[in-house]
Amino acid sequence: MPNFVYYPPQSPYLDIIYQDDDIVVLNKPAGLLSVPGREIKHKDSLALRVLRVWPEACVVHRLDLATSGIIILAMRKSAQSHMGRQFQQKVINKTYYARVEGIIKEDSGLVDLPIRCDWDNRPRQIVDHEQGKQSQTKWQVIKREEHSTLVCLTPLTGRTHQLRVHMQAIGHAIVGDEFYATDFGIKLSPGRLALHAGSITLTHPSTNERITFDCPPPFIKD
Image (cartoon, rainbow, N blue to C red):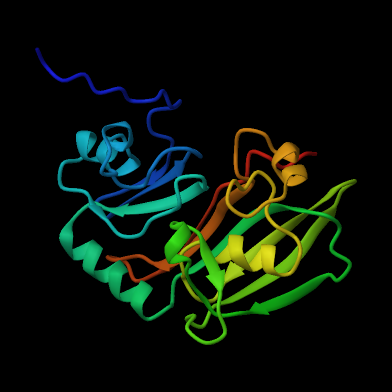
């Protein structure tokens, strides 16, 4: 009897923002892995879906399972190498949108706190001034609401759960975050983490032009 693999429904199957001979830019839904996980229930992923359409596509970077938004895959190895160097040289700029707990009084700021894995509670991360790796996040208030604040986040480093840990560390965890939010914060966004990769700017692998792709978050209210 063949093994039955259940893939949780995701609609649309692929939300394509842009595609050419070098790159494909997609809007990843929250709850879908960037790459396949080890467990059968985690075999479905954005990369697997892309490979079914373009077998030569290559992974360049990832988003957390719970994070939605822009992610780019290379359509060939040369493009993957080109963008990989850009990530290493930190010349790819990314911005995120998040709804966080409480009202932030200041208009902008910088969180500069070292982060490491909380080994006893993986995949959680924690601030650790002795063993943590340097991590920096810029934030800017977009809109203050009744019980939360909409912010734009710019990571200057790329640590696991960096934005989520940093916002919790300054007393404003991202709502809907199962690892870092309070019970009240979970109730403010039931069913999803209110974190979205909203834009990315990079140098195109073939034209060498700087290009920006934008994708508005689904949780912004008018």
